[in-house]
Length: 241
Image (cartoon, rainbow, N blue to C red; front, side):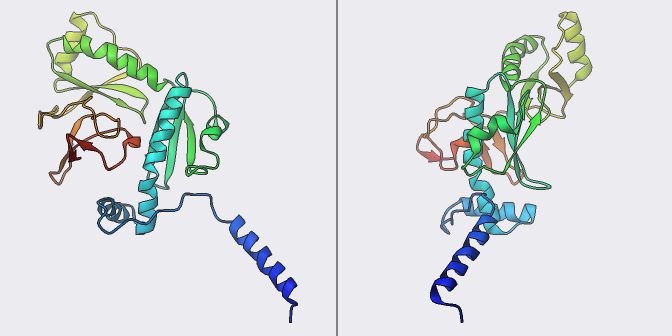
């Protein structure tokens, strides 16, 4: 039989070994059964074939991922090219930079909930440049007499112009002697957006965020887009979104 002090030492050593192998991923905080996010977690778990705890953990990482994006956009504007969550084949937070590597973002994530979850990819155009390109280009193409809409495709690292009739749009560009920048892609779509509510981008929300585009889920549920760091308890004029 081991003496008591040797048994304690052995148990302590085993605890050290066990805890040293635990990943530093954030642990999910349990959700109350009345929490509307639980419904989202159940849907996520079914869609991505993970258990409910893992689904909750992943959804709770949206806020720190959004906060990381804000920090990088503020502190690394010349190289930050966007951030998004990858759900398959494995769950990662993808940060796109025009230069740098994993060491560039280490100060932003070490010892935090995103440690060991962030993957850096290299792209060509900073997000700030895409945003300024879209801002300056959109009024120009909107004056061509052809209805257009626009978005920024962060994953593809480009500004997108959406049109119904590509030939008509190209002819209008040529007549106006307009050359689109390399980071702009024209995409033909079946339909453009239709007004659905008296809500538009830029309206103030309860947590200091603002509204984005109005959206409609395939199930018919309507809503608005916001930044990833805005959270899921946002209200507008006292009403939950």
